[in-house]
Length: 331
Ligand code: AMP
Image (cartoon, rainbow, N blue to C red):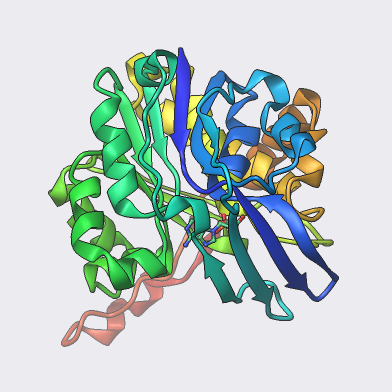
């Protein structure tokens, strides 16, 4: 089993209340691959410029990720993104986006990338996502992400991509923007009517929700007191989620598989935010992930304690029946 990912490979300039970086390795495909590589072989597809450092290629190749389809464009510059976070880290402003080598990129996938059973179309121009989707004819589970920029300037192309995937992973504000529905559940149902069978709504510091035709599931973010830089948390979540599904691709839409995938995505993303960029996930170890999966189980578990609640009065009901409705505690 293998996972192919296409998406930005970037240099990011990021300012958070806890510091700044002028030029660090980032990009949606980068963060995705670092997380998904815990589960499977990952093939990364995308261009970089002449300015892309060899040590950053080495980071991309962490845990055996295949970088054969990372194309260095002669004379080109790597995708660049600059963002600034508000004081509570839940709001972010994009200051600059330079597509650079992505502007003219025409993906030609190696046989290994084409043959992957799982495909993730990470955030990048929808036209490019579609070109890669068309080349991966053998993919059995295809998921995708996107962002407000592409909803604003390339909505029709984006909808065409959505119609060709099994799973959409988007921020909950983007889901609402895309469907023009104010409610995440109805927005997800609308997307499901376009073709995908799974919708994941990422909710930043509040966690993530999963919607399928048969299931609804919500998981909180793992509580971290010292969030330093949330950049890439969404892509890291997607890498954990899709990586877990890839290991169970025969049962990719099974409720138990999808719920576990939500937990793995959440656990790995919680490490990503503890340091800038890729710094923390590069050196993350499996035991640290298992530990947070267990804690997430604890966090979301509660034992039922039966008790009787007071019944209300239906309009017009005889008030003399009121005594029977006093609450009783069965603890
Ligand atoms: P996230 O924090 O998970 O939403 O992802 C942040 C990453 O997305 C950064 O590392 C950026 O390089 C990358 N990114 C930002 N804007 C875009 C865009 N328009 N297209 C593709 N990737 C982007």
